[in-house]
Image (cartoon, rainbow over all chains, first blue to last red; front, side):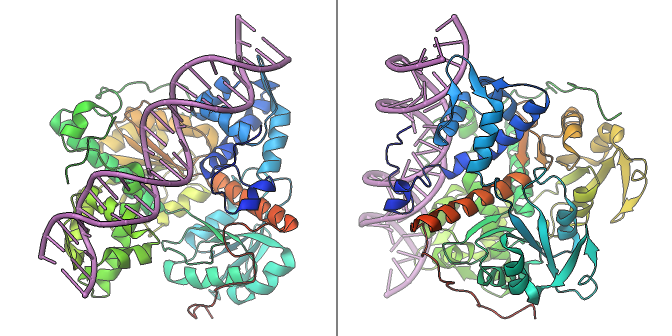
Length: 251
Length: 251
DNA sequence: AATTGTGAACGTTTTCACAGCA
DNA sequence: TGCTGTGAAAACGTTCACAATT
């Protein structure tokens, strides 16, 4: 290891304490590696090389190795990585060795789906509290959890040790909910509402913005249309229905 | 303008045709500016300065100006940007002056919510086709649209001029669906399934991965815990419940 | 007087290329 | 021999600071 002193890393001694040193961009990929390693383990593999893991994750192998080097990886030169050990190490790094209690605020259309979504990495993220303001929703059970009124956020988050909040309210309600969560000690928030949340800098906010995602794709559609009109070659082949038809499924 | 020759930009003449030249990271922010400009316009504003718009979007003002310069902006020095003109220009850049027909594949838990989600930027993205394999779902109507069988993807996407596909199937089904969409001429895909899709390079794929988002937050929770144990100062204030309580809402 | 547009500095992330090790 | 781990270089993105312009 030895990490050549990351220039800014939050504050001087954060680095000294062995914290940080992992670029944000790498953290997102570590989560992806972890998932794919789980699948490889299920298939009975015991070791994997950086080239193989890079292949299934769509990441450049050198980048992958650098990412893994940040967590002080124990690869074996000439062989690869021992999968089970790497999984353990990734889980520790990503904080998945502690359970993270998640609170979800807003149980409307999207929120309801999130409450029932099982794709949250198998285990590790029990949705522990549900909140809404709608009297028709408060009191009902979803997946065995009762929906509470938003005003109960402070007590219930404290009682249940909530560490992560998810906001799936309509836009106008989101900032108020954010303030409540922050006031209750929640320091990490995933925001699905189409607004920019204001919060103190020690609060980590991530945003999932479906409208923005679609607009980015629309931009690429427009680019392609323009390119085609002008007979310009973009990144890939020109056109002509390449690949397709790999594996039969879904009759 | 004049753009100092972006070094790689897909291919030589793509830049020559006036395409690209806009960094991917900027495109995502342009979509955000557009939304906030819409809100400002509703409130009756006619012009906005880069500082004001930066304030409400949480973006650094210089970055914002650079982003806008990519679209050949018509700001007025000493005054700011004329909101309606800027909106028109952003819509053109983002391809929102053409309607984009969207197909959604997978109408289970999450997909059902997406089909009914109205937050998709007001207008511009009519969900035009729904698909699933489940016989209990095929044939039902959601928001006035009938759910078709996945095997009909090629005909229906062609008939309805689908330009954007959204995949919200279980993981194992996603690659097959992707192949079908690509084979039907769809070149832009938004993937909610927890797998890495393989597709030819001319296909633009974006991924929304809820499990990964949560794991990134879990990493930050773990970091904070460690930092607190070690008495280390991270990026923001140490702690002590800063801000909070801005606007009263949500009784 | 105020604010844009942008060259240049800076910081971060990616990629290369190869030394070091099993 | 094959693959990891990592310095160094390149590419990319952000921020600064100020000349240009209304």
